[in-house]
Every structure is written in C-alpha cells, then in structure tokens.
Length: 212
Image (tube, rainbow, N blue to C red; front, side, top):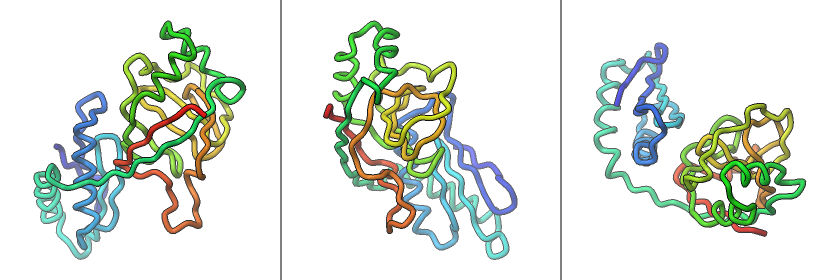
C-alpha cells in the first residue's frame, strides 16, 4: 500500500496493481469505515483500489497522519462490514436495452442467455462515483466482461442498466455514456439530494438483478 501526498492537506492511499481487484477493494471498505470515525480525518473519498483522505494541516502534522493511515491499513482487514442486499427488477432488451443484441452477438450467446448470465449472479458495489449515485458493481461473469463502446452515446436514459469494462451499473441520471445498455431498472432514484441518505447504493452493498 502506497501513501502519497495529494496537496498540503491530503493523502492518496493507493493499493492498485494494474487491474481492479475485489479483495483489495473489500479491505478498503474496512479502511474507510475506520477512518470515517477518526476525529483527525476530515473527508474520506473512496476510489478504485485507492482512497483519498483529507485532514486539517494546521492542527495535525503530516507525519503523524501518515503513521495513523499506515496503522489503520494494517487493522482494516479485520473491520466488520455488514452489507445490505438490494434486488432490482430490470426490463431487458427492446428500446430500453438497445445494446443487448450487440452484446449477445459479441460473446456468441443468445439474448436470453445474456440476460440469464446478468441476473444469475450477485454484484458488490465497489464504489460510488463518476456522477452522484453511480455505483460501480463488480462480480460480472467473465463472458460479460467486455470493453465499453468504441463511440460513447451523447444521451443515455436515467436508470439504464449498463455493462462495460468489467463493471455493471444503473445510471442515476440521464447523460452521456460509453457503456452498453442492456435494459431499464425499476427501482427508487439512485440519487436524491434532499434525502437524509442521498445515494441509494453504498460501497459494500450486494445487488441482484431480476428480469421484470
């Protein structure tokens, strides 16, 4: 684990070794939990196999914070995470899942087999980022771990169920996307700025999709 300076009041804890690794991310969830409860830490921002931490540089020495982070990383493996499980119905294919035929053709399966693969496993929310409420879900079956589109779309509808780059996701808001659109999710809004907990998904949650 590398602890790098990220300005005068922040450290970037980087555990990546090339490709994204679920086991490392799971330990980062424990680290995030430990650091969030520490009064010396101001903010904790979860990334893909990394974590950005800020602190008050006028009150705390960088060397002391660095040592605290190292100790917390050593303890993170034993931190207890109790995941929630969310089941999200999805309408696959048709106008709301226009890339399903392409994905099926690319991996040499029928559309129904692609849907069976996508609904036949449980996913973990690795992190929330890119846009408010956007959860990156890991655990994609290997046949579905295809690259993103060569040409991104200018507009993808809200609550589109997407696939790309080894992740799957549900779009919290309309906007551009380079992911393959498999269908439309039937679930509460993934981001509500006025709610006590704005993001529906949080790191560590388990998500299952079912065909609607």
